[in-house]
Image (cartoon, rainbow, N blue to C red; front, side, top):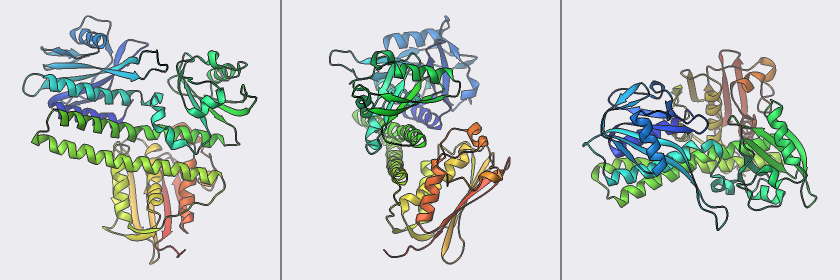
Length: 492
């Protein structure tokens, strides 16, 4: 998982515990090897790409230390220079297991604990680790666990409230056909509570789900749909989608809700996990630092953690609002604008801060005045920036340039414009983007995932403000997305 958030997290770990280096490894259950996910080293320039996989079935000191740490679910310290793959790190080396924990499903059941990786720190400033370091490392490893299992949606219940208005039942099924996560709507469809921990065969009614899961695994396309009749004789539309890890996401709808909307729900669920994980991890770390006694040098770190939590809170709020607004679009309703006067440049700076990790792999060129006051729905206009920027990053290669321009078109209109150096759009598809829900070109499907609703929403927001959306593109060279909106909105 090449996560910019995880890279930033590991940098913070090294800063908080005051070490020269830190690394986060995921544990491959199938091959019993460690896979480097993020590495930072101030002294010797070690990077993620410098480390290969670490085989745990060896007698090397690091492999033995990892096995000991995972077995005891506690820290192990090596006091000599230690070889990790082909590289050698300086002592002391702290190995802290990363363990994912799940609350029991039944009152008599024990909590589930599963090792998912290790956090490794080396060359402690001051020479040795103490109990405070162990306590901090344990808390930070809990945050790492949340990041490492992000793709599995293991904390689905934390974000379930965001979908209270969307009538979709969701289940995540493991590669061995065990239900990992299910929301309340799915439990209603199946007629059983709880579903987690049970096999598909054990909860199925008339082998309907068994056949659907088998079909999606066998057809090579990654998706399948079928009709599902519940124990109460209710009929639902059921869709299945394969993930890269061999898991299956099942979605159930009773109303004629489009497949695109179902996919949107899963996408937003995934995106909401990131800010929630960051907020929770930052607050937990601050709590541990307060318990241990705040030092003067901790002030800057605490202020940055609080600032990051506030930024991610705003991002999460906007994602939820955008989901509800897209639900209105699907219901055939007009978007409602909350018009206010605001600085468009300040709004741009906010979204650039929120997406700093997302855009880290690209060169960013911003051309905008110091201030530009307009009237409009600030949150929805920020979503225009958000969708344009994410689209540019998704469909252009690492290291290419994304240009953001904000300028006055004339005395009455302003333009929000984002240009990328990506795959481009065929001429015959330009008129369909943002107008047909779920429309995507063959090029875009090969480049990245997505369902095409982001541009539909962006066009609707632009037009709701009395503006227009324009697209210019050349295949193989890049695209420019532009929203031109009035500076002022009519009263009423």
